[in-house]
Length: 146
Ligand code: ZN
Image 1 (cartoon, protein in one colour):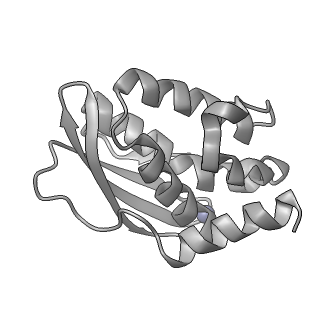
Image 2 (image 1 turned 180 degrees about the horizontal axis):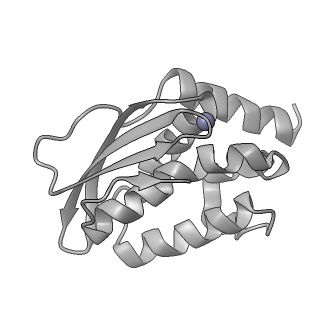
């Protein structure tokens, strides 16, 4: 099995069995994201404890990439501080836009590296991150990738 197969398996797995899916009644932050180019929609509940993302859940409908990305993101940011989340977002953004990104920092999120070769899908993968940023910023405005 080469690296591409491994990455594809991670995406298929997270699309079929998304982690942290659903609602979080005690969430202190919420945000809604929309990627009209593909039809991906996402709702994010974040339980922010001081500076730490204690827990989060996502709900929505979208393509395999958007679902897998939200699932991978939910695992990656849980328990992290806002500063750590921002650094992770920078690494993901660099990876998705072909800038490589910090592989050591990315961990499983590196499974989405192949998306950089499909510019139309970059927004599918980044929607959840923009939505998370809005939730952490306390923005009531729905996020759109347009
Ligand atoms: Zn999509």
